[in-house]
Each structure stands twice: as structure tokens, then as C-alpha cells.
Length: 72
Image (cartoon, rainbow, N blue to C red; front, side, top):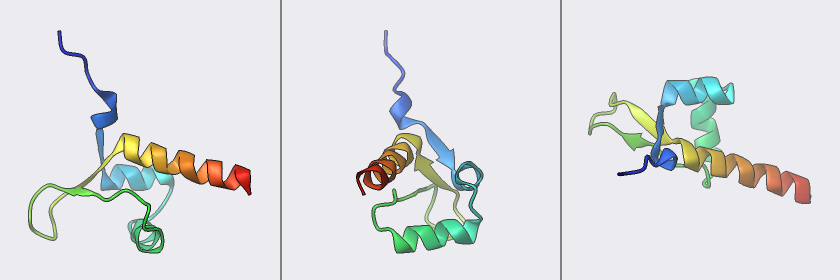
């Protein structure tokens, strides 16, 4: 029996914006300002291709930001 791997769950860019309470341009600014922010996975070659993010990577990034804040 194969076990599901929840760390491979992906979320659409629009849902990520809702989750982080950011506009799309706000997410773009965050990605440019913070090189540690997870990179999207594009569903195709075109600029209009849907962008997805790995939920576990975003959660790990958030945890690192929280840990850095708490150590400061």
C-alpha cells in the first residue's frame, strides 16, 4: 500500500495569495525582495501558464521567518 505524501501538495498562485492575504502584485514584490521565497512550478511554457507552489515549501519558509523573528 502506497502512502500519500502531503508534502507534495500544490496550491495555485491565486489560492496562495488568498492564504497569505496578498494581492498578486504583492506576491510578485515579495518574491523579488526575498530570494528565499519558494519558486513556483509553471504548468506550461507560456507566460499565462498556471503557477503552482508546493505547500510544504511555503510552510517551511513561513516557519523560518517566524523563527528568525523570535530569535531577534
